[in-house]
Image: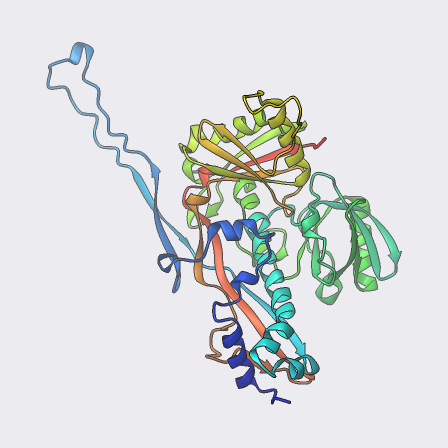
Length: 433
């Protein structure tokens, strides 16, 4: 049997995955794939700098009427205002441990290595990509991964929590068993419990009932039960924040759209009209195409949106929009009395801006939807997902001290950036049919 060595595993990895492991990213990370790779110009050594125009030239003087033909006085120059957006990448590391027996069977050849290691690489990449995708949407979100209450003490060390309909997104919970979260009190933002008692493991979830079973210490579960009984709690992945407004994650779409006026985003205050996204209230009712157009028109009017945008929403919202789309269609020459066809794979609507592409996203909460132009957004940072961890040179794998196995890590250092946040719109208050 071939020797299980770090050098041999590195060689087999390069032989099997010469094009990298990015293709192993799951289809659910739609925004990451739409943004594409980090270009050379967006790679940062320290901070990424992007000059942006926040105010137009206003040194305009009028000379008509009684002033026509006279040497009228000029009002003076009022220059445009340009500021420098600054941001750096958001780091993420995902560790995986591979048992020695798995490795001993996989290092015989490149083919065996690819067959044996692919599920493990896929699992790591799935976690890495999903966490980054969630960060793009809900990084620093004031409501975290959802609004939970009505805790039921299943045992002294477990609590079953119910998520509100509006803040439920099945993709944020399905398959997350084993992930660790912290809870924060919606009233004031305090972390619930401390140290190890503040850690709660996702044990299971029931998508139909919108319930999640969390396991923790007796002290932690007691504190969680008491706070949830009195109000609302917001969970977030452990390490993403230490308090409701103290973050380790980067700014996501929800944060950009809902953060208080006067907040500095990427070195620029969002009191600037062109640096603040818009929101549109669907009125605690179904989202229709008419409401989508009204929401998008806020970006058209304020930010000068005149290009194609993507709208990401839950599957439930998409169904309502598809019905709205079908109801507005007229029968054309393709109509056949002998054959009936209905349903759509995707919805494309046209507004004042141009095309609006309606897309399902399992990570978007049921009461919300997000609109933004992909062409005005990018990934900014030093590296996409890679196995080459900085400082370790060509060493991709390492023997895990104290364990009969080998460890590898994937690492990324980038974050979402929109060069004109005024083109982003958050739709909220959606109640699906």
